Image 1 (spheres, rainbow, N blue to C red):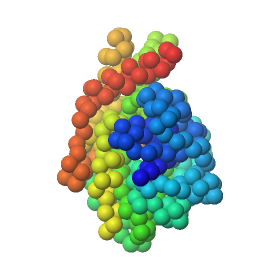
Image 2 (cartoon, one colour):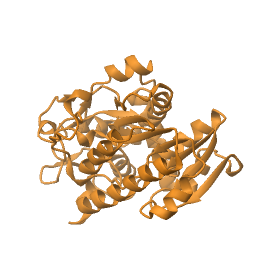
Image 3 (tube, rainbow, N blue to C red):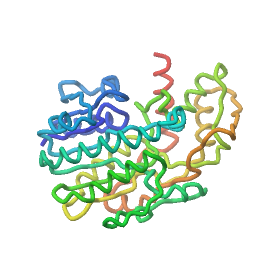
Image 4 (cartoon, helix red, strand yellow):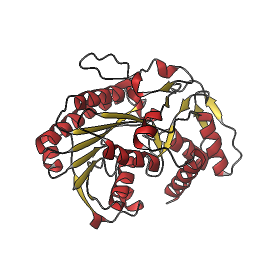
Length: 330
């Protein structure tokens, strides 16, 4: 059976492709290479002979339908996404995140129906949860904190990206002929994560530590805001288990995270430690910080998937720091 990974040359997608190939799957990688790259695949040791690569613009339905033809299982990871720096770098960043993701998802889902695929595993986001609650320190979200009940939608997402993911989940809940799995990912990190303006906090802080003292080590906000960080290999393991567990009855919706809240200042301290430098962080209270707190309740995923994270935060951060350091020195 052929397995298709949209966004397969991207951060999480490349790791998923590696795992699927290792499992003996026939894998088709679909990507427009706007943020993904062949280098991501090569760096993980994925041989070109083991996969098929299709360069496709998923905002074009005709191309999308053709590209998805022959696939039995679709892992749909392709999306426009970025960290705080990216989202605040232009006034229309949130609008583009909404409109482009709506187009991508609609085309992929329609193509899946017309091509009669068997399963869709969709990467949603913590951004679907009520943003008002994300402003409170110590907030933990369970799947029940956002549910799609027929057409009675009441939501408060985190920006245009969060709204696009809500609409993606809503569309999937209307599909009756395909087995659906929805993974609400929290903060995934690791090798192949963007280190440009789309970088998230971990990569951004690692870069600052590596470049110090040429670059100031500035932490946005007071550093008390927390996130739920999950290493990418643990995320991939969960996605594959979701594929195994989904049934026809209704979409399987699960939080995928570590279940632990980590303050940004703790991440900063780890990056300073790994750098071996004496750095005193500067906290810029005028910079945007996004949500104050969001942590996953992962009990449902543990029970249904018989899964739990294996890589410690310390271990995952160390691997990521070493990768970024090497990347910047190449």
